[in-house]
Image (cartoon, rainbow, N blue to C red; front, side, top):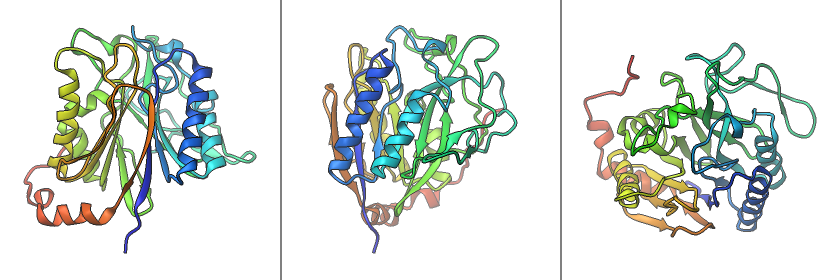
Length: 302
């Protein structure tokens, strides 16, 4: 018999104040611990957000204050966490020497939690940063990182002016929590079905989408529709965890593998918790074996 995974969704307020953001993250951990959560999911740009665009001014290394706070809180409360941040860019298309398959430096033991050592990427030569999701396990170890592949160059915005895209050919970020496997992509990736399918091909049963979904005509409807579409076509649970605030949609949402919405928030900062049971997900996949029936694979574009 499988055991449900308790998931806390932290819809935080977007802010350029890094210290205040770390406090908000700490409060979300407290709320998650209060209900016995196994994992805390946080939005894109949880470390720092600027409506006019996020770049190197908000970048922190993996051993900087934000990721260190994630690791300390994860170890303190024994809760895994997935959170969006901004790192210095790799400065090139390939991982630097010493980085693992998840494109993150290998941790080394130094004290109560493992400090990040070894090569740490620096800002790219063109002055851009890297939109990154960091996954930390319940012992405070970095499980992996995902550098956003599809940058938001749409609807009058050019994220690529400030950010460097992640390499599309590195192994996808998937993490095992209890009896479920979680995969991670970021915000604008949601508009590319192959991103979600690649995670499912790597074993993901739950797809986590940290986002700072910008307001605009039909944008809230796009957000809801695309989350449900990725759930239905992949027979997977999809959790969109959104940043809230001025100019942002908010509206974090969880869609089941049949597309049924199990959790939907409004645009205010808030924390909610749900239990994800592997058995109903397996039942949907047995009834609708579309993943087994498909005839095409997903490969990175050269």
